[in-house]
Amino acid sequence: MPALPPTDTLRQQGFYPIVQITNRGADDITYVKVNYQVDGQTVAISEYNGQLVSLASAVDTLPVYFTGEGGHTFYAWTSEPNHGTDEFIYNDTASASFTVKSDVPKNTSTITPNLTGDILVIQVLNPSAAVMHLQLVNVLGQIKLESDFDVMNNSIITLDLSDFDPQLYILYGQIGYDFVKRKIMIVR
Image (tube, one colour):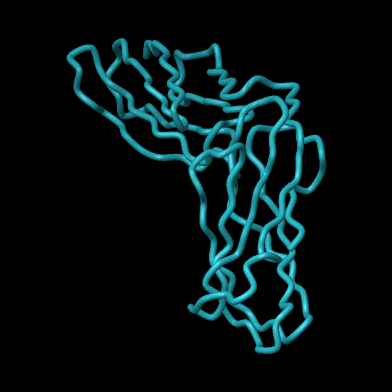
């Protein structure tokens, strides 16, 4: 089961690991758990559902995984083929080394400088998680807007603030374990 990120050098913190699953047994495989991790971090699990006859292989793209810059080792192993026990666990593991070298620091965010209009644009580059949780809070501490945004597939978030009262707001953003805080002044 060779398993690697797609190249040995990645240019972003998040990537989609790709594994090759090979059925080396006599029985067809229709289900197997794919366990994976980087550098001993928390194990992520994906489930493969397909039809692998004896000696057939399939390539599976796993859900997005995030890690920091530098050198890393990716580990993957299968378990519970067809919801059972694998009698030959010695051919179920693979590993590969790779480097994350980003030209953009993780969670780099910019907010358009024109904050007097009704549209607020937030751009998130190189996120350290797939979802950014945003809150817009007024000076009394009341949450006026709260939502999650998929920043892995759309790095630009556009918020229409036309219904908000002119005043100072604090924008809080959380991506993984990282936080962003910005002051927003609506003036009309």
